[in-house]
Image 1 (cartoon, rainbow, N blue to C red):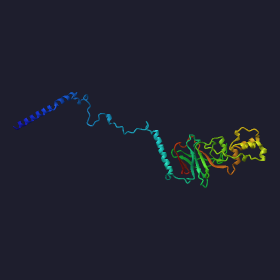
Image 2 (image 1 turned 60 degrees about the vertical axis):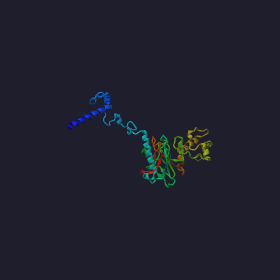
Image 3 (image 1 turned 135 degrees about the vertical axis):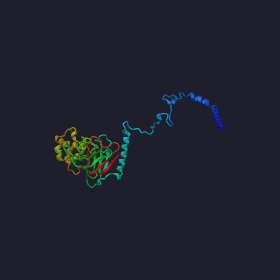
Image 4 (image 1 turned 90 degrees about the horizontal axis):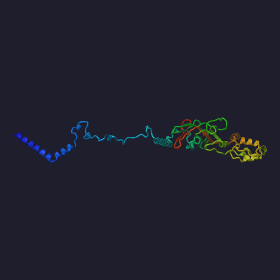
Length: 334
């Protein structure tokens, strides 16, 4: 009896479920779904035409998984730093070196000659080594000459280091000169030119060096204050008798540091006068006549490093003056 009742209830539930499904549109949804399914078994084959099957969470396209927003590209095709990167690195290096040079705590190993010899004026933006120069100034407070033997100049940026060469204290043109260490007297200046010497050697200036400027170019220019003609051909009876009035008048008209051999011989000048003028009013003639004068030597030196290329950078550089022990005497930053 109980089994019959249970069977009746189950049959009734099935009938009610089917009736509800039909009334709620289940039949029409089934037909519509079937019309869009090309092959019910295509999902089990490799020739599906019904659409793409994706696992849960799988992106619709492989390219969606690629994220290049955080990828850095190289500055150059070959992986080398770009020119701008190199310039920035050099600028940063210069800034660091400049700050280091200006900071007394980071001056390096200071020389006992610090403040006794310092950098002065310079022209380091010339493309020609013959025109590129630095100046070294000896303090007026010094009590004795300072020898630059074994001293050198070094760029802290490029690493270029060049020794300060020897020089001729008494330079004579056209001969092999004796050279020695440059010695800066109190208040004296050394013009240190990167290129070779116009006269073949570094030298100390004297009261006759202005004659050299007529035949060679010097940077910076030489002082053209030489001895006066009246000092070498004074107006007296002996000279009037030996050379003549025209000779004395012509000599008096000559500019200082002028070599008359470059001029045409004036009319009325005797051979004795012409020979005297050529021998006396020249660099060597001036040196021989005045080398024993108390004011013959001048405080300045012309020092030539003999380089065929620029030694110091056009834009920014940090140049150190080093003594014979490699200790820092002074630092030039620009």
